[in-house]
Amino acid sequence: MSEIEIKNLTKKFEMKGHTVTALSDINLSIEKGDIFGIIGMSGAGKSTLVRSVNFLEKPTQGSVLIDGVDLSTLTEKELRKKRREIGMIFQNFNLLEQKNVIDNICFPLEISGSRKKEARVRAKELLKTVNLEEKEKAYPSQLSGGQKQRVAIARALATNPKILLCDEATSALDPQTTDSILKLLKEINETLGITIVIITHQMSVVTQVCKHVAIIDNGRLAEEGLVEEIFESPSSDAAKELISGKEITFTPVKSLDTKRKIRIVFKENSAYEPVISNMILKFKTPVNILKADTRDVGGKARGEMILALPEEEAVADAITEYLKENGLAVSGITEDL
Image (cartoon, rainbow, N blue to C red; front, side, top):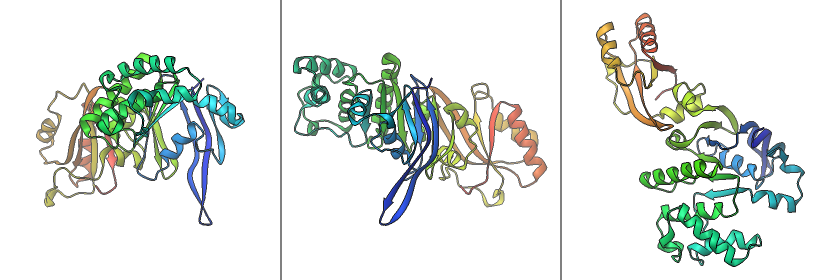
């Protein structure tokens, strides 16, 4: 049984006399112990979806089950108790400015009825988990963005949740700090066995730590599956755009301008071979590199390129087959970059 099951979920809002559909017929299953990414552009509906997991947003239609329990069947008291199993962290940290670090971590324990002494013992343990023991008496205004997010993570873990929801938790952080927070989340997942759901618009976040990913586009589920498989061979336009983007790293030469573009991904067995050089020598025709990048996908370096192929269809087809035969994942690109 999946730990989180989302069935036929639809969420509508009434705004100024109009009905806005934020989510439409979403179906997802998230296994226990997974790090699951939900990604989409701004306004796609991903934050509404993650807030539906703990019923901060109640679906218009459909259901959300946690460990087989349908949240819509619970009373408010039962729902509050169930939410203790679901921690949540946010982009803007949501720390209490008038409380110091250790009191911020103690806060959810105290309001749930824990004794103050027990709460402080638990808070000190969590400060070690997030590597902030020396900051227990500091106030949020004295912390960096990364330190604030570590406090927020510790506070979210205070009630021993089974699930941790992260709503754009790294969007306000610089790349180096983002990397350290993602490593911390991965460690928490591995050591505590907590299921983590990460909401983001950054594919780099998903490829670095997530095992599975769902892509949300205009309130609908565009694609889902293993991160590695979707990175190599995205099938939806939304996935292709999120992975490749529209910014061209190298300006194409006019004489090689073409509508025939492909995206290739270098796997482990092809990363050390001069495949592109050999291809040009074999077919005796130039190929333009429109974009080149390297990504961390599940702890493995994966190279990707977008190539503009020759206009002659037979040559372009032969090049595509050659690349596949040499162990590269190849997918076509039809949209303008």
